[in-house]
Image 1 (cartoon, rainbow, N blue to C red):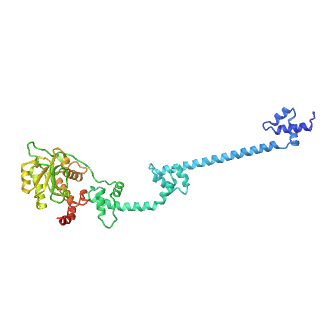
Image 2 (cartoon, rainbow, N blue to C red):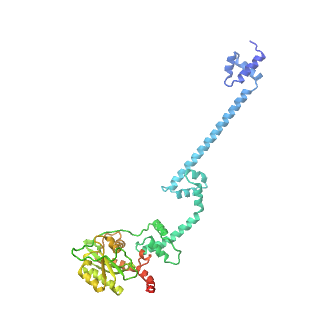
Image 3 (cartoon, rainbow, N blue to C red):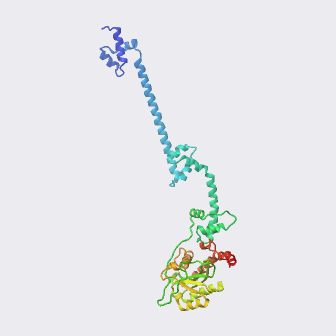
Length: 397
């Protein structure tokens, strides 16, 4: 058995301890000694440096692995929480993914998840969510107020057969002194939320047929459909009212430009001169006299006829006519005709029969003067407008 000096043994141990990549078997082979002998020398002369280093390294590795595991577990927990939030949110939204609904979801699940986490997952601003929560009472109060106003709007809307829009309904609401004034824009918003909309529709038909050779009257109006007082300027026209079976009824009108009042009208199944003379005669009966007034019309054959001109001369009325083929020169009468057809016919294309046509048109014409709010009259009915301004006109005179 070879004998090794003590220094050799110490050097062998130092070689092994200072080289961490050197195993006990490799070290013993490199030194040419028995592995058991090297192991005995480690027990006798070893400092334990390599064991401590290995222990520290193992501990560090274990700490790193433990930290990594905790981090992974945390990430898995966050992903699971996000999955649960999105899964519940998908059922909650039911295809209505709006900002308000997301706010409501966060508010309903505050006890299950943190607000911060839900806002992050649902891509919400936390400050916006808290503002939404803090203004909840104000919103509820507004909803109740809108509901009360909506009930009043629905009553007026139904009473006017669905013909009034936001401005006219707002004027009707403001006539009630028991409630604060309301803006027409707010009325429009509430009507839109309720699905209410004033009926609008335009129909067009040419009824003016000028006969060649008939005398043309001068244009005394020049598209200025205004008057300083009643009984100064009238406009008139004939419009057709379609009935089933291909028949038409015809309405002749006489409208005061001062208040847009329908002073005279006549309804018949023909377009003869007697139709327009009857309407003008009715206007004379309502006003008492038409002497000195201007009657403006288009170039229809009934208005250019000698019989109608003689009738105007007998009543002291001066005739006026716009250009041929230009509806704008008689826009006031054209607008009245369009409004009448839109609000009486609505979704129908024709009246059921002439009797129903006469009844419905007569009723609308009466309401037009007494109840229907006109934008020209500051959203007052023509009769109300004239009554309120009669005192002013008398004092000015």
